[in-house]
Length: 107
Image 1 (tube, rainbow, N blue to C red):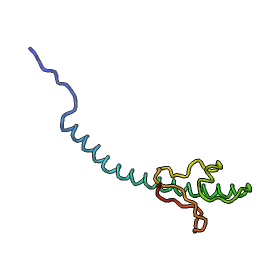
Image 2 (image 1 turned 120 degrees about the horizontal axis):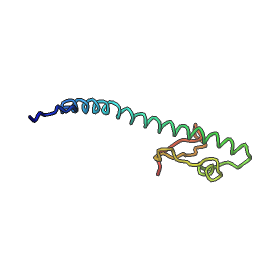
Image 3 (image 1 turned 60 degrees about the vertical axis):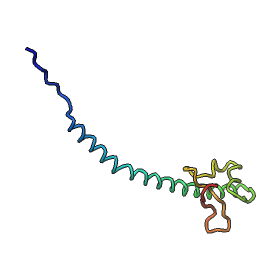
Image 4 (image 1 turned 90 degrees about the vertical axis):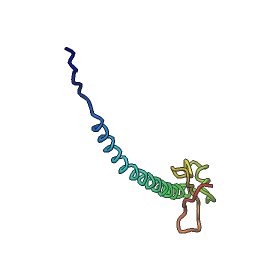
């Protein structure tokens, strides 16, 4: 007599339930991650502004002349880059403004 062996495994319904749970978790977490990424990029630009202001003070304390743009600090070796980490904003020197440095869209 040929008896069929009962094989254990997952049924189609069990697989669909697991897939639905994973999809639900992805739907909940992916938008939150993109919001966090935007927040991190914004804080990175703020940190670059603070770093540039401190490096400007170091530049002036060492007896160097005044600067005319943020690129002057870069060419003197005080800054590695004048762009924010996301690459869409650049550092701008504004000596007559309220802050010495600000960011604006990269042109």
